[in-house]
Figure 1 (cartoon, rainbow, N blue to C red):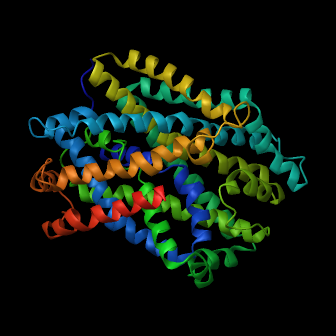
Figure 2 (figure 1 turned 135 degrees about the horizontal axis):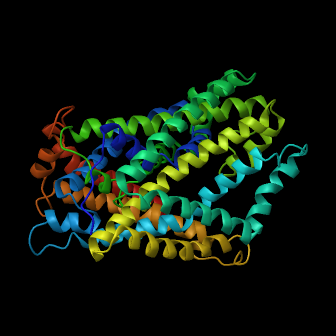
Figure 3 (figure 1 turned 180 degrees about the vertical axis):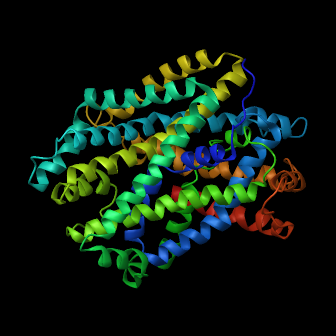
Length: 452
């Protein structure tokens, strides 16, 4: 087995870790959830819960990784007390990573497909909304086309990971994340220059009491809690693996805040792109998941220079989703190398074949197997997403939390020492009661809310 790598630079760690967090949830889910839950009031709640829930659990995942210098299973084995079985959770973490990739690669393929459709002029001659809307339906109905885009996404991810941490993940992420940030700024400036920008910003940033009354305050609060927590992909060791590669010269609280700041910046900016465009062209801003593939293409078709702006938007979306894919792929590859003592080349080959085959049911779930309904009547993709988002992520985060703050696990003192090692912002010891008693309750509420 190859010698374990470390990040070449601090910037590389932050960009790779933020890239793992920045994904479809930021750009796809965040704007329409804001639209449905009261605008600015929801945004403020989201930021609050990000600080009180997301940041602490992120420091815990990173602390377990950095203290052990191991991946999901072996990190627990290194830090747990003799005879304890916390490491069993490591196997569930990897199950979550594999399940996530079984449908996330398909959705990322959709982004890539729409980029090439816009860049190639496929939307240029369309004038009717029904024509534009039908493009996504045609993609879902064609298992061959959708399978090809999924396979391209998987193969590109494997190619990056095959080069290792520094030459592959870190190098590509620096370029891709830099391009992503430039793209989002260019797109936001363009949207803010549209005629409906003022109305869009008002909808986005001003509290909408009517929406809050309609949904209920509790629904708005739990929606903000849910978005803040899940945006960081905590609970399946997707972040823990990068903690195992990072040096010990900076505190984890400071680094976690930087990761969250970059993640939140992309989420907030995505709203600045979408809402002004929606109000300019008379599109419902709370249109739901169809916003990206049905609503926005209709906006770009009617926009001057829409072919260029549509291409840039879906290139940005492709970067956002692909950054998560290569980060999770790295977790999977490192796990396979550690646990089975095989080379990186073999880890890439075996996992690549498995993920390609395991992703096929998600592709077929929209056409050949469209009548197949699994958990609660959900299709294949939604069933896989339910297991990851409603079970493995929140329960996994709760396990990491209890492992770090309870005397039956690693213990609060050990966690705090690792978290505060290095220069930067320290986590106050005074937060111990909150982390031990309040935060677990908040996460349990999330789990119950997701199941109900």
